[in-house]
Image (cartoon, rainbow over all chains, first blue to last red; front, side, top):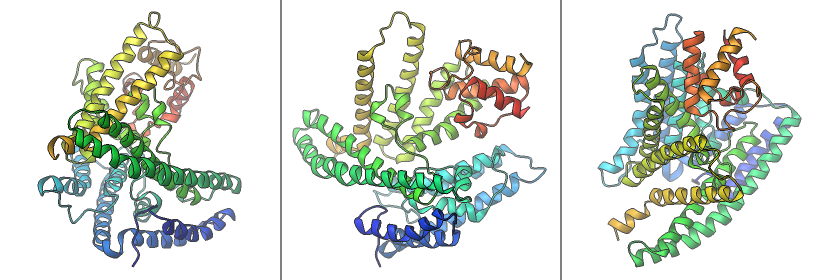
Length: 402
Length: 78
């Protein structure tokens, strides 16, 4: 049987077009068939998780049953009229939701790189969706739980492997309605444009940077040992490859979602034009950074402030930045370079905030013009690229395995 | 000016260090006057001063980005 990485090759796109055509005609005529959507979802999931990768398909099914049951039980508890809404039940539920991902992430670190049998492509993205649903259920903003809709939310095939990370309430609103024809025509136009821009990003630019240039500069940097011009080359080339590859993939995922009448949120907004690190995180992998903002950072701040853990709000903000970014580092994987990457961005946020406060106090004395703006963009770009060099793991190869 | 609006504006003045009443439609996030930290402080102050419980999940940035929107949101929750 055929087996594909999502959006990996031309055949995948041809099959996608064939599968989507009836659905698109349906939406144009104001009809949406969840049955048809489920069938094509099933086929594309089978293409991704079937064939030689059938064991990951089994892992996916096991994971789904486990998580849906968990969220269902928590909803039952929380939505009772007299729900005591105990904090510890909430905490235990979140821990149970994260447990499979934790096993998958920790296994390679303790067993010489071997991957866990319960792992599958996209498990970390599904876990975000599960955890946020539990949190919103606790807050009472998700008032009803539909196991089938929740399953369709988790399994929405255009975004299953690497996001963007949608929100349950937002997804259900789109998925359970039919856009007007004018609205759908607009979505179609945008969706097709995104897919073609994705081709340019992923199959041309990411190919040039990642497949053609990266091995050359990496080889040169390994020959040179230590700090070298070639290493600087690796830093920039890797950063470009990372962006165009992931932004390209995200454009496919968003574009295909639009064709299905679902407005999956965008993941990137010209990140290399950021004026500071805070601005960068509002433009880079946005659905991930907003997820961390809404479900970790803000909740931590809320908890610390409410219980008056720290005297100053600046300390509170700083501690939360570092914890937030550190968790993001751990989420990427249990290796020193992902964790250092997280810490690096945590401290970058702390410094950024201190600078913004200083700037506010000295508005009159500090120059602000086109030049300072370009300088800010240049500086941010280099700080970001340096963090990607850490993230790439190339330093690990260079220093410890060369 | 009614009480709710006055209270919200005074909270915002404390948080942003500026009088925002003249600019009810200014985007506080774009202007750099508010961020996630400020948002949480706002939620806590609404609880302390007006007794309105707003869970973090309820905080959708686009619905809370201008003083006018914040006042409307708070009034709708009372």
